[in-house]
Amino acid sequence: MDHGLLKSSMTLAEQGYADLGAVYYNATEADLVAHAIRRNEGQLGKGGTLIVNTGKFTGRSPKDKHIVVSDMSEDIIWWDANARMTPDAFDRLHADMRAHMVGKDYFVQDLFAGADQRYQIGMRVISELAWHNLFIRHMLIRPNASQLDGFMADYTLVNCPSFFADPERHGCRSETVIAFNIEQKLILVAGTKYAGENKKAVFTLLNYLLPEKGVMPMHCSANHALDNPADTAVFFGLSGTGKTTLSADPERTLIGDDEHGWSDSGSFNFEGGCYAKTINLSAEAEPEIFATTTMFSTVIENMVCDPRTCELDYTDDSYTANMRAAYPLDFISNASRSGLGGHPKNIIMLTCDAFGVLPPIARLTPALAMYHFLSGFTSKVAGTERGVTEPEPTFSTCFGAPFLPRRPEVYGKLLRDKIAQHGATCWLVNTGWTGGAYGTGNRIPISATRALLSSVLDGPPDYSSFRIDPNFGFEVPLDVSGVDSQLLDPRRTWLDVAAYDVAARKLVNMFASNFEQYHAHVDKDVLAIAIS
Image (cartoon, rainbow, N blue to C red; front, side, top):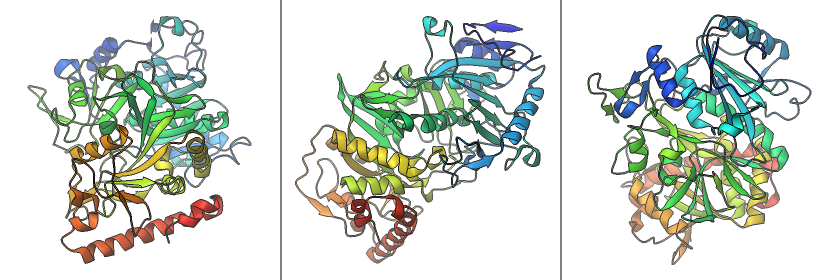
């Protein structure tokens, strides 16, 4: 039986999902919270939040992402980072999931991905869990009443956490699977309750579609100066590097916290919500984000709370360090209502250096910007992926390797061309460790990072002079107002400078070894500055 607001001409039965239980179309936040509580999917928290636990999986499963091989995809997909699935295996998976769905209740949201209507796609998301449906309603862009009238989805995502794949039968790696069939315009997710798979699946899809339209898809947050969208900044970085935290600046307008496109007319958010890490979150350091954790319908994911008072513990990582809050963008008071910005004036590449070697800020030439974009050096922060329990140095090309269906050079060349055309200034900002590596040194204070970013974004920066870093060749300011000058030179923060030199050489060698894969694919100017 169908319930809710169905303005689309397509029902689930007409899509091939027959003999289901109750189907709830486009349920509101209040309804979804109520459904989730009734179904024992979570508990009601302070302010009407929904507190949930994702069970065994508290992070993404990038190795379980598969793309169907076809004549269309064979020569386009970056198969080094994406697992293959045959069309027959996908069809078996889809048929078995449909059979699994019979008799069960499902929740459907018809949503948009992409704030720029020229590149916007309609997404139908079919969820087994009410709270997953609430999550994706927060994450994507909610149509208004007129937009829902006659809504036609371009792509469909089906999520069944209680269905477990059979690797032999379904041609996948494990019982968890995220499978893309571009030709069928269908994404299947099964065997995991981690909600982030829903949003990252949509991001991966846009990463496939948009380059053909000349749009650069970016794993980044973005903001712009108050009342001045032309002064836009984007912040590239993996989860845990500070994208959400640093872009939520009360002195600037937040465009979005995770996924954006850069078109010929400017930048635009892919989403309508935020998915913020809450480990060690405080009202003092991040008041806007902190406030969302007691707002009605915010999804509180994998946080420990007092069973009687529902007080959240922001320091207890018993479940995972990857604890999160998912909420609509308009919960942030200074968030953009349009999701649109200008051409990026400043590009910030966020890295989390667990070696304690990189400076907290450095200016990059266009060639160095391309080098560091393709390198994508950072540290995977505990909990963001299955099996990561402490910072793990890694190279994630384009600061988003798990979400790239095409080869990295496709995105690298798009970024290079956009920078050349619009004259953006690029910065490498390290939010990792100083005074030693992880376990010995200390995390660079957020206050220092904010001061450095303010000096750039309020600019042009009044830097009197720069030094050339002997290991990496980028420009490092010698003095920044409000920041201890010693912090700007990481070698001076180590008690044992010989140990710093050893760590620096190790990191340099890691950069050199990783970049060998791109030597045949980059221009001479980038090759000339490549670290060796």
